[in-house]
Image (cartoon, rainbow, N blue to C red):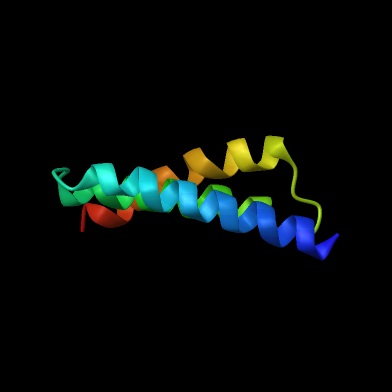
Length: 72
């Protein structure tokens, strides 16, 4: 079970990193929002009872937090 969870996490992390490679010409505020959305999704997915609904919910929350932090 741990192996499956670790493999899922690694695949998601690689996908996020490749996706962020397309962000080279983005403004800092947009980069922060994108990075925190990915972090929110990954963070919730790796909770002990992490579900796909929680992952989908964690992404927008992380994006909003990244957007607000980037404003300062």
